[in-house]
Length: 322
Image (tube, rainbow, N blue to C red; front, top):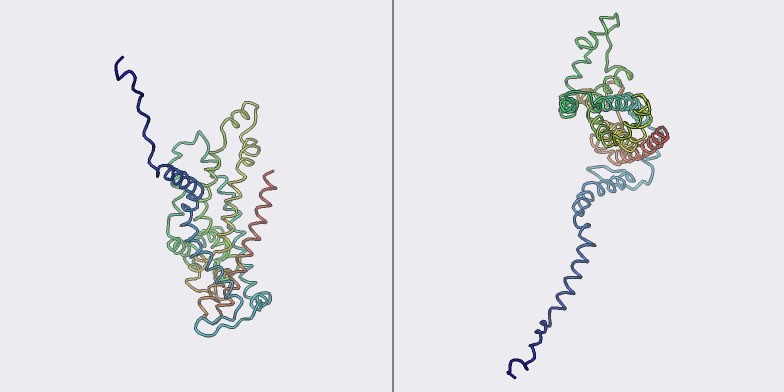
């Protein structure tokens, strides 16, 4: 018998002593990566929000509790600034103006956006891409340019709208001199600029609705109007609520359009005919440095009003869509 036949095969070499430790470290690292890496990815947003969102809000809340002079002393006065709001006629005037413009702009804007979105969603419509791009153009235009153009259109002596009204025997209107006329002019400006934006959001929601539902409804004999009422609106409810809340936030914070319509006057007309809450906050908090604390209280009042109105709109839209 040969020597090679009786020799046992060599045993496998033992792993280095640090291999199990490395495996444990790798396993621990993988667990930590799966558990905490998502928080690391979203951390930049929260850091930026904390620096430019949360801190200014808390700072404004602290300022609102003081008689805050931007160039002088800061005296703690508690809720006196908020108490003063209830007796401030200029604050209530700005609140009425804001809600007036909001009603004239947001409601027609959403109805028009819903109509246009449904129209652009039709399969028989030609050049749909062109129309979808064209309807967004007003939102791309600078708000300053929009305000200048509409300011010329609503001029008292040489404006286009007064000329058209003169053709049917209506006297010239000084659009900046009365509440209802200035509200209408500003609401027209807002509607022209933001209707296309809301239309595209609603259109995206409509395109997410399964086409099988419409085909089944058509086979059952449902008219296009019944399909819209029974399928489109209920399925579009989450998107429509989102659009309503966005429009509410924008409407309650309206600032640039009325400011430019007033030719830069922060009081919004000679008698504050269209001064909004945001304009009044700017007047008290920034324009008048000695009342910065009161301006901060106005800012927090706007925040609470937005939350309240958004909640009311959310409830109303949910009930209407059932």
